[in-house]
Length: 604
Image (cartoon, rainbow, N blue to C red; front, side, top):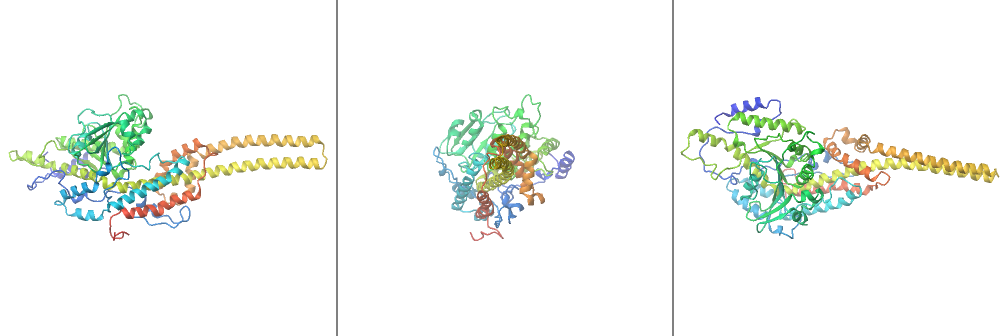
């Protein structure tokens, strides 16, 4: 690997031309470096990856849309958004009876990590000063749980977009790994844990979703035991059926490094032997016996860090992997890390350029923007003392070893993000609450608009029928009063009954047509535009994305229930949802945010 940085950049730019990639994603430093004492991967810490976690546009309290609340829905005065920042180490708001998860003190482990790294970076003290106290963390989690639980009855009443038990989190934060088979997921888990727990190999070695949790002793439990545990927080997997339950397992391990969070390994993704239907075909959704995309989405929504891993042999060419990125990991950029593992296998820079370019090309097919996210190119150590260079090797070999330093540093960056999982929990819980309230509020507003329009039409039809009955009965009464022959009076009564019956049949058929029209995609979109005129006029992308997420579930909910039987949403219920967005979430954000200039909690 004798090349200069300039040559590397030229090759990358020529090999990946037009792919909207950035060569900064992978840097190999070939300049001679001074000899320095070897540092282990856990000791090599730098301020570059101690920055606050990147926020996502889905965190509405930080977007411009969240600040525009004046007279929005119900003429309420808007609150001011808080500021997000590094999440503190989380104390679980659910406690286990099977294993005493509460004994796994995140703060003790945080102190251990801080003691190990304090000699390397003095900025840790400043970061710790910005972390809220454990009592504040517990209070934030409890309040988020209570607020989320308070909106679930309305969600059930109107068949809202929130999944059942979505207000219940896992007992500990967790990191979720997904990717191609043989991409190094199991090896990376073993590297993080500090002991061999998962079986690694070139061929697919595991077909289960494996939850690895810290505990007092080594114990393995099968899927039914994992899903049946009421405290660990994975009972929601039951909705995906018995096949998934029997392809899940729990591994409790003692003496592992992640004593304050869990890790979840997933089956390696491969294409079916016969997959002629194309990417995204519904024929391939159940080819594992369960909805694999739905399961990945379930785990990813609840995870605090998600790693999507590729390897040089299959750099994004597996259709199932691209399906997962498109359908299961959408909207999770704030906690998603894309990793190209085993980069040390490249013997020539041209091989790396082709693999990196192929990965960028395939990702560009499913990422709907021209700026691709950062791709972490790394490798795992193959033996102890990997950073030391023996004195009896040649200069050429020494340069090759030093060229791997960038890969090792990137690996440490990924490891640092994984270790931040407990700190991310509080921010992720607030973000999830914000997202849930927005989904339910928009669902309620649009559904009530459609229901009210249908009710208005149905009321007009009933008034027509009632008017016809009153008119007929009035004419019959006048005939009797003026002693009109009974044949005329009877004829009027019969004509009235026939007319009202025919009118009722006609109105009923018309109401069915009206219902079909109101629940069509076009009319639902018109209702969204009518109820959100300001956001539509300003081309608010966040509200457009929320609408795209709830449109189909809303249509299905209205169709199943029927507009005639769809429950009305009270004004007070929607006002309460708006109050949570305007007041409660900004307050929680301020509690969880670090102290900085302009924040409201500098004196905390």
